[in-house]
Image (cartoon, rainbow, N blue to C red):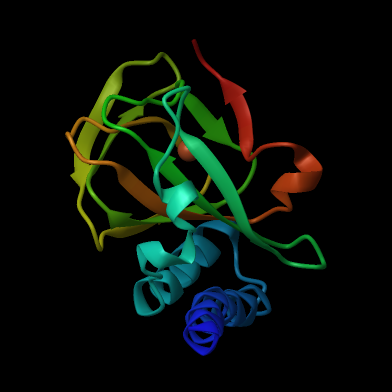
Length: 174
Ligand SMILES: [Fe+2]
């Protein structure tokens, strides 16, 4: 039993380690923010973790609001990998980001709305399990909403140390 627990844990760690190694490689190219977002998105598509990167407690979410779990912070502060858990109906405020951002849905569906600076809705999409996209400011004013009746989980990668900046958010618009 103990052997099995250790094996499972090694698997969980290696999913993030593998992803972090790929992201590190892309960042070292020193491309523009927009290009980096696309390069990192390709890495996340190749190394998309399973929901088991989070503990069962983390995967359960919280009725108080969507939950964020820091899975990796690069020692030089160049990027962070976060797991977000949304119960049905949970929603972010309208916001944009300090840096490039890449996200992939690993469970459920995330409904995303994109706005212009006047908060006119530009477009919306239902991001399904397995969908990955990347973007860089400006033009990244958005809101994410779990409109489904299943808990949604996604992996977000931000081009900063979110523990140092406190958050990846540049500004809230509401
Ligand atoms: Fe965001």
